[in-house]
Image (cartoon, rainbow, N blue to C red; front, side, top):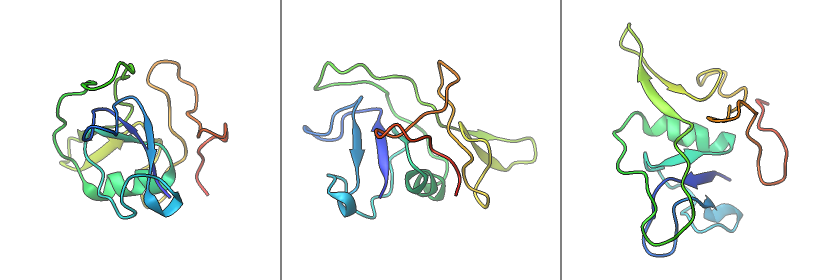
Length: 121
C-alpha cells in the first residue's frame, strides 16, 4: 500500500490537494506506480518508492480542474556538500528509512487518515 498527496492534477479525475492510494488496497493508482515528483508521499511504502525514484525536477504545483487548495510540498530533495542527495521532510534516510514526517507549517507529526502517526517499524 502506498498513499500520496497530489500536488497537481493527474488527468481529469485525480485532483491536486487529494490523497490517493495504490490499487493493491483498492486505490486508483497502479500498484507499482513510480511516483511523480509532484506528489508528497504519506506512508512508508510511498516514501520508499519516492526515494527509489530519485531526485527529479518538480513541475508546477497547482490545481487545474478543482478548487481544492494545494499546500506546499513537505518533501524536497537537497544536494549535500559531498554531492549526496537527501530527502528533506524525514528524519532519517533509507536504510533506517523513516522515523516520522514533519508538517511544513505546524511542526506536528503528520498522520494517516486513521490518525495513526507514521513511525518507523
